[in-house]
Length: 149
Image 1 (spheres, one colour):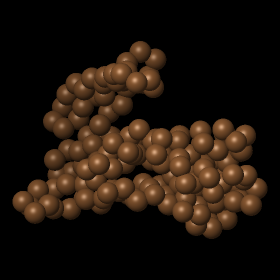
Image 2 (cartoon, rainbow, N blue to C red):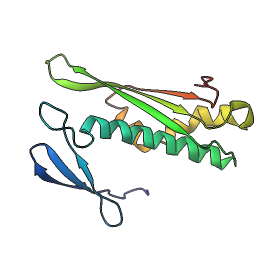
Image 3 (cartoon, rainbow, N blue to C red):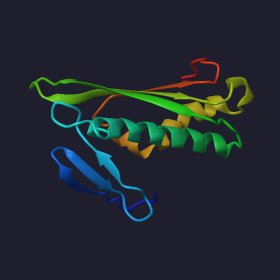
Image 4 (tube, rainbow, N blue to C red):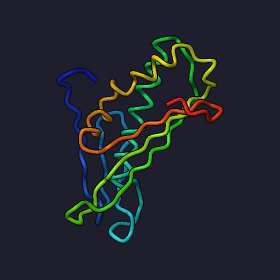
């Protein structure tokens, strides 16, 4: 994505709280839905889509930073938890997000890891934007479960 670029998605209601999300040419559409009792849970909820966007962007940023040093951390994985609760006015809000990224390789096989871990988050467009309004906690583990960040 380049500076000034605009990203547009289109949502069309299919029934009740189910919306088809159209990302544009060449990208498969996605059915989003609220969980019961509002919806039927036939697709990811808006909160799940937010969590997925944060996790995907962080994973991409970490992978890009490692590949700049010609490192191979694959296969990577991520688990993202969005905490939903009530704000001071009693309205449901995403109160915080925790993203746990796991490298597919042991830490001792990856060069420049400290440098990468110190800077990759700053280049994550989605997480840095979301983090201005929702606290985002990021953890990184290696393939053996050793916490690196």
